[in-house]
Amino acid sequence: MDSLIAAAAQALAQGDVLGALKRVALRNDAPALSLRGIAMARLGEFERAKALLQRAEQAFSPRETVARARCAVALAEIALVSRDLGWPAKILDTAREVLEAHQDHLNAAHARLLQIRRLVLIGKLDAAEQQLNRLDPSPFTPVLRAAYELAAAGIAIRRVRATLAEAALARAQKAALAAGISALAAEIEAAAVGLKSPAARLISRGSDQPLALVEVENLFASDLVIVDACRHLICHKHMAIPLASRPVLFTLVRALAEAWPGDVTRSALVAHAFRGRQADESYRARLRVEIGRLRRTLRSVAVIHATQDGFALVTRRNKNVVVLAQPFEGDNAALLALLSDGESWSSSALGLALGASQRTIQRGLDSLWEAGKVQSFGRGPARRWTAPPLPGITTTLLLPVSLPSD
Image 1 (cartoon, rainbow, N blue to C red):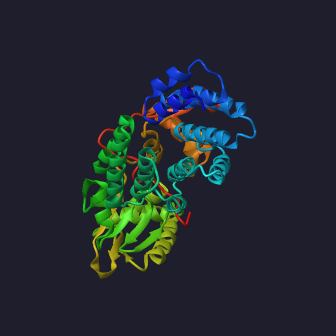
Image 2 (image 1 turned 90 degrees about the vertical axis):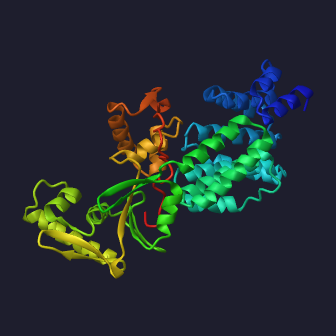
Image 3 (image 1 turned 135 degrees about the vertical axis):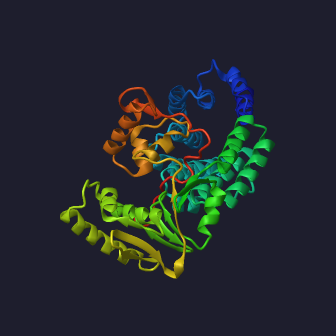
């Protein structure tokens, strides 16, 4: 490695992107191309960065397997930041194995952290946690340690473990200060602020109040029966009844929970669950069937009593009932939450993250675009979607995750 390449690499490691570019801007050899690509990625020029890194990967000889693997890792990071979640994950896995085989443990750890971040984005938290547990952060550089703690915080946040997330972010902030990279410190600070912003709403006895993530964590530790509208679960202590794959039943139990301790009329339940205008005999028969199914599903925590006008939810041992809802709701709430992270998403990546078909995602995007809530740029496969952050709301904390029942 010549002195200019070494100096450029050192500048990049310290966050001095322009200083790195000054040293290699006019060079077209493979090491310079790779450094230029990384620098352009740091400046947000992802398409240019991708082209440079692809040229660098081709310019390295087949015997330079470590250099080619590092280029593959850099391309994977660009794909992740660009929300190109369909990028072949196997390529990153192969690059990580090459780096591990050649004792390049730090870059191999960086590759694994990229895999973890992708798994968190698409809601596969168990797999992400397993990958994170394989890493030993003790030999990491401050930058890599900050990335490790950010990944740990992301998993804890999505699992509604505010205490663990706060501790991980504190360690990440300490590592970022040691690295001396202001942009990294700002990212961690933004995550810490988001941790204290409203993450959900508590609906109980006609009241509606915002909750920060730590308050949501405390809620799950309480003795209440919780109808979790964020993840479509019925929770009580350590028991969870998943209803993500049974939307009619969840709609019914949420309506009953919001009216608790009162009842809900049959007409209102028909309107909620079937969107029927009148509770005619056909709808009433269908409602009886679904209520019967709901009774069997909830028998461990509650019973459903028929009243003169409709039905009422009665918990066992007279436990109170609350509803946990997202900060904002609607047909495209989860879609808007993803888009509000400040990154640009393709429709295919959104579908992968939310487990929905591309046609469903496109209908939602069209609806949000007509309402002026999202913007798009590019055409065809290169089209990307984004939305401005919603002030005062942490929209991504309680996004749907992949549940065992799904």
